[in-house]
Image 1: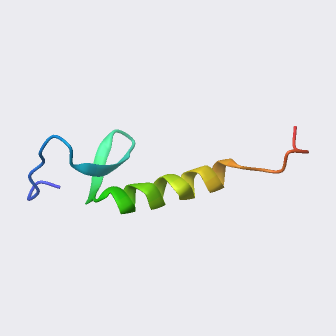
Image 2 (image 1 turned 45 degrees about the vertical axis):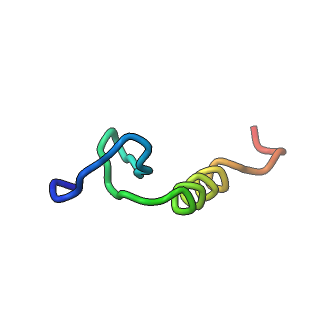
Length: 46
């Protein structure tokens, strides 16, 4: 995001070590919830 400026405390989405999106806490919480959902599987799976 070359046109963006960042300050300490800003929220960002990172993929493969690169910032792909500047967001707010609500957006970060939504992204984290989605990642947790993708990581949760059936407890019966090996």
